[in-house]
Length: 386
Image (cartoon, rainbow, N blue to C red; front, side, top):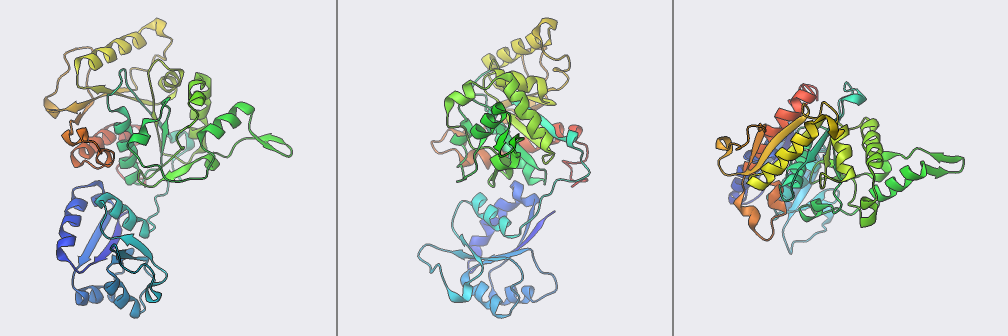
């Protein structure tokens, strides 16, 4: 479903870069913006038969439109620094900062439309795809890939959960965590170990939704990062399996993306056993490639204790590629399923937002998602079931 948005601002030079970014980003697939810089043209459109899903504009445009009494469409005023934030004739709408990062601006405008992304009821509970993101070496870009996948899959209309199982949640270095009063993963782990939530009549199963918050910038659900470092260190393989089973059993998610830490940890071992698809992220360097090869060789051996189908559900993606399709692994034992490009700007000091908004990297992630999710959930990623 595409949100139809009307943008009305005085400056035509404001419109051009916004539309350029829209058409070259993931928002181009879920938003259609009709922009006006002349009041007369805006009013003529808004008095027509085709009403948009939301309107955002300068105060003068919005005020003139509201006088006509056609305010049944959700609307917001684009405010500049120093402008009046409260006006009686503009009560009832939202206010969005006119000048801010384009991804944040488009996300705020998109939320106006109240575009519902509902998980199709035709999908049975067992159709939830558990997708584990693993790496045999640190610094491979595993978390960056996992977060981008969550965002892109959420943008298609899929219901997505991002689960970080690192000892130290590195997603916090990329994301700005929203405020939330939900108990979070620490409390959920305690309730699971204690046998459920305490009630007057004893203990009952926890309601998973009580521990989850919505990550609007990713368009997915998640747990708040665990603050007590010891909680993660003490999380066993069995604890992790119970957590994964519980999330999958909720039946509300199409895809659960599980971001892991060191592959030797019990949490990562549980992911290797339980997830239906394993995405191995390799850094484009000899050490990372060799470590991955050794781990996969070991896991394919009969004495490893790993499930025999592990290799069939493993996919390999080479990150930080400068030559994309020309990249080749020196080892014949490993076969690449996808490549992700090297982004020079990520070497800058403030790279967090860049990691989720690079058009070149997004293209690679979208291709990766189509290759992994579509075979696992036929028709869902392409939109035929949503």
